Image 1 (cartoon, rainbow, N blue to C red):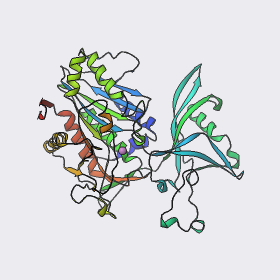
Image 2 (cartoon, helix red, strand yellow; image 1 turned 30 degrees about the vertical axis):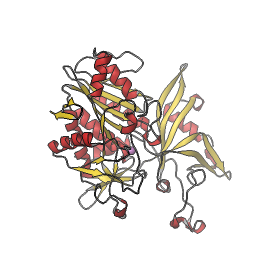
Image 3 (cartoon, protein in one colour; image 1 turned 180 degrees about the horizontal axis):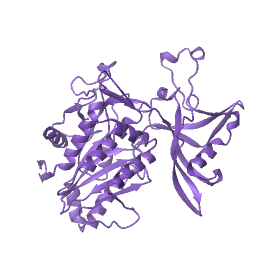
Image 4 (cartoon, rainbow, N blue to C red; image 1 turned 135 degrees about the vertical axis):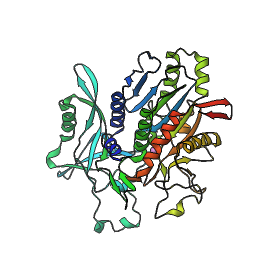
Amino acid sequence: MDIQPFFDFVRESPSAFHASDALCRRLEAAGFLPLSEREPFALVPGGRYYVTRNRSSVLAFALPQGGFSHFQIVASHSDSPVFKLKTNPEEAVCAQYLRLNVERYGGMIMSTWLDRPLSIAGRALVREGGALTTKLVDFGRDAALIPNMPIHFNREVNDGYKFNPQVDLLPLYGGAQAKGALLEEIARCCGTQSENIAAFDLFLYNRERGSVFGTQGEFFACPRIDDLECAFASLEAFLSSKPEGHVNVLAVFDNEEVGSGTKQGADSSLLSDALFRICGAMGLGDEAARAAIAASFMVSADNAHAVHPNHPEKYDADDRAYLNGGVVIKHNANQKYTTDAVSGAIFAEICRRAGVPVQHFSNRSDILGGSTLGNIANTHVSINTVDIGLAQLAMHSCYETAGTQDLTFMVRSLAAFYGTQIETRADGEYALR
Ligand code: CO
């Protein structure tokens, strides 16, 4: 699979709002109809629809022509660790510089953000004809840079320097004359005057293009691979599949990097609301809806850690993943990952039948890992769920690395998942058709 369409998607997705917009445009182009959560869902068999919440999370679904017994869901996330501009971000320094006051969103590797051209993107609320309207904002130029201190004033920088985000990570935005320029630039992006900007959620981002490397082009590096790679792969698989006997659902949630606890995150009612409303609109009563949800299956797709070439000792001796080794199934005894023998077996069997290689990942028992969407979403909609991802290096750097072949493996495995009817015959007994 050509990697370029993924690079294009990343370039169109400098913020979660843009990622959501890029997904919606692709869904609309494929014939999906927009729904509003604030209006009754009017659905027809075979229909294909999507909703957004906060314009940063997207949920799309495809109905089969006939009836359905359950849902098959793939969930990923639209956000990445970034720096967010504060409300009054302009700060003059020594009457010579204009820098921006920012704070951390999520847990990034801070050093990766220094000494590279950055831009600014997100959304603004604009006063327009007596109403407040959301506008996407993307400066689309090299607009700021966070300079390192010279080594002569920071001799310890190579011995493990502790960055202070309020001191060391504030980007330079302009010279002495730049005061007021930020609001004007936001207004220009919105096609309005600066006095009409009511509020904004704006973030720094890395504009660097994706790059393929390795002696045979086996690797690629790119911003926001976590988790736009899974969002992109799940969309490709979703668009290529036609459900029979079940409803296919694509969910891309915002705010995974800050714990998902927002109205549009995985720890919200977004998924459960949609599933119950789909059932209701298709004539299923509460009892039938609960039965359909109980028979459903979810794939939580968020990238995994590949063995680092300089630190192979940090990874489990047996349950470890490599770039281009195939789709990673993630395991954790304490259920930070939802995978268990049931969900692991079902997903691995789907991959086996599709000819997609599978790798298994557990953390070393003396290393505490991260967590993801699956177990959080499960507190709202409790269904069999498997945690998967693609192996990548440098997770939460602003320029991450992954395997070129793996994207194809993910698309194929998720297309096979959407195309397989997972039939629950009894608790613990499943048929895959
Ligand atoms: Co992630």
